[in-house]
Image (tube, rainbow, N blue to C red; front, side, top):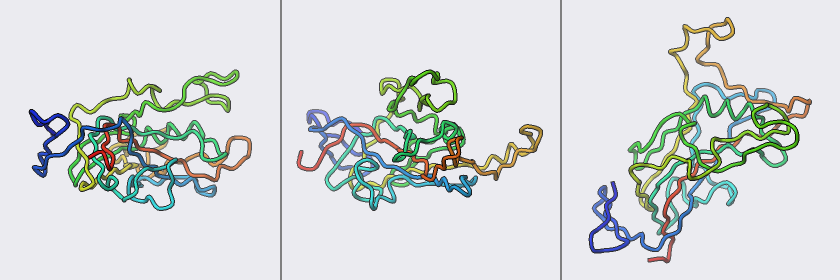
Length: 238
């Protein structure tokens, strides 16, 4: 756990390295990255056992999808105190709207593991990591609790005040490796259960929607964003 240094405002002691880190002139902001889950028009599924890594593949991404410049590390001379971790599934990819069923399939069938320098700092089902970002409400006549083309599916409570904060803030510097893995686990313990009269298949794929119900193909992947929120010291602030 990071510790403020008495008598030195803005300075913290990193217990892992013994170094003193200055995070006095900071901004409240996010470090984030985006991964894509394949939504192939011929298959449209995510096999059980699939994993996807945040912060690793950043080539070709712009500000909309990441603000990492170095894989798995903060930008040079950056430091950060992470206070909140949140995931978010965007409602659209380009002109393609994400099917409301896909929100549920992703949130209810995946887990997240976050590590810093190989040590797990948080883990659990994806629904645990509410970002506090997103949309809420309804458009037109369809209520947002009804699956329909005019409704908006939320990613939890759209309020950062309602998102869970870490009880133990985590320190990141440009010398730390940060990893985050989204996992679609096999549920072997459910093999003796039945779903709609058939045995549950732990290796069954998560079938994402490949059309909008009106015959229009969805040929874009479903994206998942992961936000690390907290106080960030940018280069040049000391």
